[in-house]
Image (cartoon, rainbow, N blue to C red; front, top):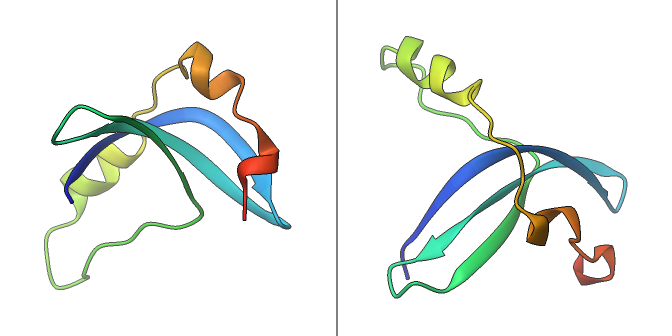
Amino acid sequence: MKITIESTSRIVNANGIDCRVWEGQTDSGIAIQALIPRIAALRDSDLSQFEAELQEQRAPSAAVEAFPLRMVL
């Protein structure tokens, strides 16, 4: 499975860990939401573009705003 995700400005606490909510879709078009506590890239690369893009966040959709925390494992 392949997914494409975008960072949102929403942070949720999942089992004591702050996670940023990312949303996107699978290659087949199924909408998904992901809770991601950390993201990193290998240090042997030029990370300036990665770090700049990591700061970009969009407003969450209505579906993310209503994210049911009961879904968090």
